[in-house]
Image 1 (tube, helix red, strand yellow):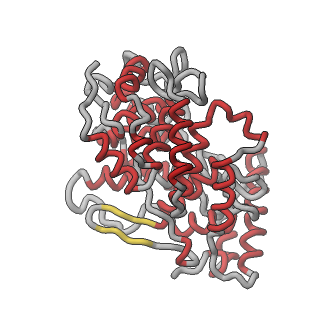
Image 2 (tube, one colour):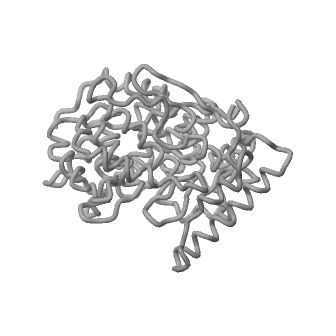
Image 3 (cartoon, one colour):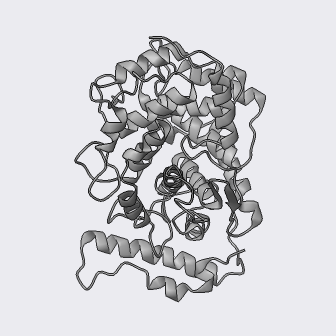
Length: 405
């Protein structure tokens, strides 16, 4: 079991802080503040009696189970994201190995059913407009529940009709009728279609080429062509290309260069864009792209990639999440000084799982930093739900015919 970097050599780590060469900017000043705060936490941990990081599993479970049953008034601003809340909480519980009761599973499935629009797709809440983002979240939440009742909530014929209506002539997807087009739409549509077995050639004609046009000179992907590379868009773009079997359209070498430079040398976590701060959610949005890269490289033939770990510092990411991102009262956070929320809890845990589990080709290894009980359930690299949940959902829907349009 490897010791955390901050115990082995904190002074050496400090040399990895961002260098400003005597010329300060607003962003460099803020970066120094973040590094100072994280440095204090690393130093406190290194000098404490706790020599190995521990996932506060019981506190996180209590936080998540409470949210599944009742949310505070502060969540009113997320009234248009209710399937997302279901997904974030259910997936986090799944990663922690927690099974919800049959009663709660049925209640959540029925609620998500109320979010389904009469003309197809899912809305952010009952009575709202259909939108690709909550459609994605709803499908994944139902797959995570994994019961026959949950699977049958999805009206596949109307979902297919909704996805076709969201298509644009160039292959992109509107997020909602009259809404914006970006790579999130393509990814959300691809996930919903592939997992429920409604995808057709017509539905995604031109989509891979449109996604490829979003790769920037930096190597990451932007939301639309010509914009800045961003971690969330990059995950969506690469995962969608993998789902559609067109991952070779990606400039993998440039992507690896950009991604590997997004892991912060001192903090250990990932930033979302060049010259930005570390953020726990990018543990998945950036870290989760590396398994997809291995898949792409392995498609080029035997020995295309021979590494026995992901191409980032897995222990450093685990260290950042376990030491810097756990709230004392349960839930996980963006960075020290922030408050916990279900979004960051979901994606911090997802990234932690990616960092713990390596699987490429015929090789699979587990590397858990700290207490062995820190190990989480492995995630599916494309869907970001449990591997077994993804398998069972695909198995169920594959027995059903693809709807004709």
